[in-house]
Length: 214
Ligand code: Z5A
Image 1 (cartoon, rainbow, N blue to C red):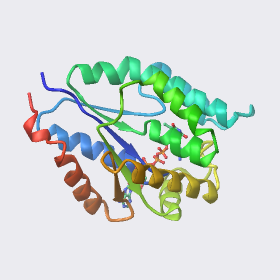
Image 2 (tube, rainbow, N blue to C red):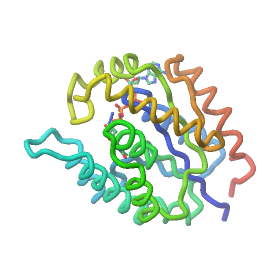
Image 3 (tube, rainbow, N blue to C red):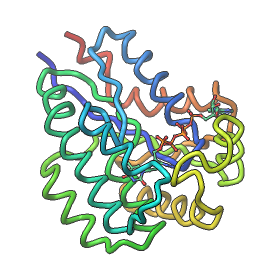
Image 4 (cartoon, helix red, strand yellow):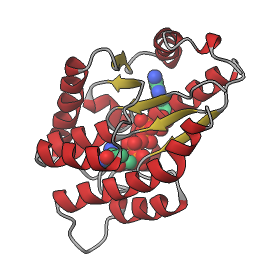
């Protein structure tokens, strides 16, 4: 059995992650590779319940640290019950957001201590880092316009955030890409979808899916 690979998609709201994640799954499927398409927060029944708690606009306040802990609680379930077993079976896991989202949203966006985030990452997924991260980058105004055309303004706690918040998140993501250029590939997501897909294929081809089929 060939080894699975772990591919993550990141970016601000409306960047096109869900759209591109489905494209990636379909593209890998052409090589007859087993693919598991999943997302965060969520990806298992219990983690999806945590997702509801963390995204809903309820009456009870949620501090930035609590939000961070909930993201990692969902991630711990997802890693243990879905991601690791899938990789062990030789599947290619395509995940819409992972720990880079916590670094960008809770770290850069909300100011949560980087040391806390890295300590939680080390506890929840030691020895597990994505093989490849596709960072779909675009101006905040474009991403928000796309997302809001679809769901309306302020549908969940994040969608209700300000442009300034998403600017900090975007800057956080770009800083991550500068720090880890081998893993994090920046893709201009303001381009037409066909162009975005072309760039994605260019990056994925380096993972040599054609050489690892069963
Ligand atoms: N979050 C966090 O804070 N910390 C964490 O650790 C994690 C998550 C894991 C999850 O919400 C929220 O949780 C997220 C961060 C936070 N909130 N925010 N922001 P979500 O999963 O519901 O929301 P999202 O991740 O932001 O997804 P999204 O809004 O659905 O955006 P998307 O997946 O990137 O976009 P899309 O649905 O693929 O595309 C949006 C629209 O644009 C759609 O109509 C497409 O047809 C269109 N589109 C896509 N690509 C193009 C191009 N290239 N051109 C034109 N139109 C396009």
